[in-house]
Length: 345
Image (cartoon, rainbow, N blue to C red):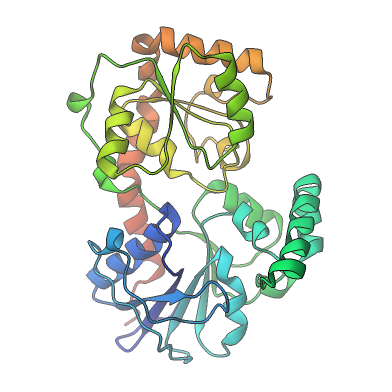
């Protein structure tokens, strides 16, 4: 168990100058730990050497009560929390209590330098990543850090999972001390049902950072639909698209509980995905299986998209349970934190 007392300091490691759902979650954790009157800090890590770096909190995260530090006390009273892309840093400590936070399964492997792990994970994708890493090592001198599963399995006091997909992976691979530490979406995206625009446009939203090659095939077959890539937009611009569109699609990988589907759903969009990663687990994406297409048959997908567009008013209630779960996520997140970090008397 994690042992917490009045002298404990908690260090949450985070890549520097990156604003994503994952890095925001790391700041949300520090924010709530400080609300519990614990001594929690963000430790920013530089991309090249994986060393603590003195840098400012990104503007997007200034709303959270966080303080950054480069001074980490390697003592038994302290706690170090590492996201999956920074697990190699655990090898630098001898005394602290360690917590591994699996915000993603896929991203652990994508950052891994262990070729055997990559092949065991997904053979074809693993081979591609190996070739990519060899190229980077030879021609860009980029260092690869993440250690193998065998080297990290028993190092952490807790292996925390953000998704049931990650929980399944950890249990399947016999990781010890597995416990939930979930997340919640930024409340800027939450709107009440009464605020949802009823007269929506025939617009389909997608994330160009995921599954773009396949998405382009769909777009080519449906030129009569307005397609909106969610890239380079301000929060208010995102909300505007969420509230005026009928559908968000995602045929990329789902490395953990994804944020954009939740942000879209809470603002009234229907959701259509594949069944990869966390999308294959109902607990992570609680929508009817009719909105999770297993294969990549273009005609099936095109027909489904057109049906959702044409029948939006009658099918949107299919996502009520999903929206309800999203509204409950912050309470679950807080309960997880309080269970793990409860101070011992």
